[in-house]
Image 1 (cartoon, rainbow, N blue to C red):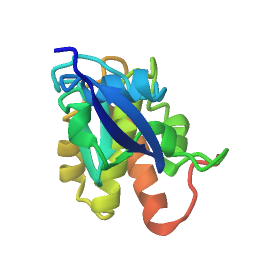
Image 2 (spheres, rainbow, N blue to C red):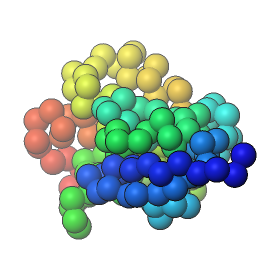
Image 3 (tube, one colour):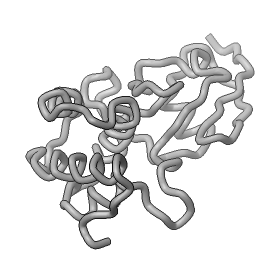
Length: 165
């Protein structure tokens, strides 16, 4: 199929008019057509979570969604977390707690954790662990990722900056 469809992807508050084949994944459109390369593509089967973004407030695997399905919806990617030079609490916490090593899975974890904490700021520890277990990391052993998300959760709830950065 070589016919294309004109769509508008609203990514981090900015509209991107693109023309895509109906079979093009949202992950590919975000990266290749809109230049937002922070969204990483790992397994391309929805298993690893590296491509997690937020669509209309819900975490989504962008490799499992077609770009045409996102036409007109609000998409948030890792590039939209920081406000200028000010890092999001989760970004700071990942740095403070060494929650990343190679960094490949980090954007997916950041977006997943953002969606989870925005929806449920007082999430129970067991539920947080369950949510985070849906993304895969091959480097960190998860403990520092969990510590980072817990730290950021406190800051996001209280506005109290922790970790000294």
